[in-house]
Image (cartoon, rainbow, N blue to C red; front, side, top):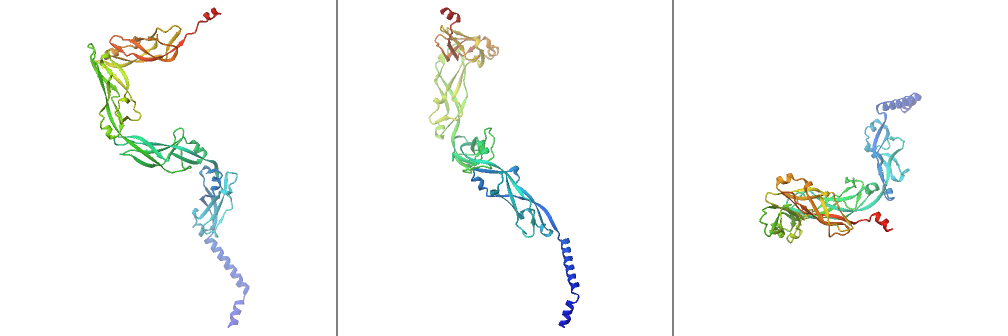
Length: 423
């Protein structure tokens, strides 16, 4: 039996070997037809390693044109390549391999099916641009935006810290002109502190992109302290008695009211700001006039004007049926009288704005060229910017308020003929 089996196996050995080889080749053909080798292109994002190499050298890098991907060809069986995606590959640029300060070789490796894929040998590069890194310190400007819904006024705005250290590309850091931390006070009813992200502005007031900057702190605490406010009228008291031939029309102020700040207890006691009767003495009035006073000394204790509010108040004292207006008088209409011998005086302006008073019809008919005045120069000496008063001659139905101006007084030069005579 054994001999029959052995004889069967060894009979026609050559044909049997040939048949086996043919079957194997046929299998290879079938496999390659059913699962052929294919090549595809993949694109992956490049990861930069060892970036500290540049940072330690005081340099920063920026990917040129923002292109941080590379494309490469991969060859593998169709059954494998169809399962692959860009995430199955690592694309790494090691900053230690930087060439000519402009490009880094990219190494590509497969994370999946590493033994079944072939990656093209073409060398890819990541191109970069190098910049110097600098560090600067900036004072932080604390500000507010919006408006409180209550009768509160911002008194102080502070921040902590007050100085910010900024590190980044030299070009960006040097473009920073101002660092601002802004707190929004809309709807706020009392003192508060808010954490805000500081913003950077260049010399033109444009916002500087801070994404490439490293900050000593990411947020700043802005503290806002409020004080109470109140709007009060301005009241003018008078003294003396008006002349019998005059009849007082009205006394008005500009502005008619001001906003003041202070603690609630102090503001509760303030009904108005009173200009005392020593300012306006009716006995000295000869007609309508205007005067300006500083009300800061008339404010009650514990009360101040809000920031930006002028303490100067203009008082208009008008006779009955008279109105106030202004006129522009040419300096040619102003006579300089009694200038001391050897001196010459000149006004420092070509036109002078003066206050005029009268009935509406008289004001409407007034021609500025009809207004004339003079300056008494008898007490002047050489010097620039000397303050003098113009005395005006009143046209019919019009009162022109005397006005202060400045003149320059110089010594007159001797005539050349006189100097020649002396020689």
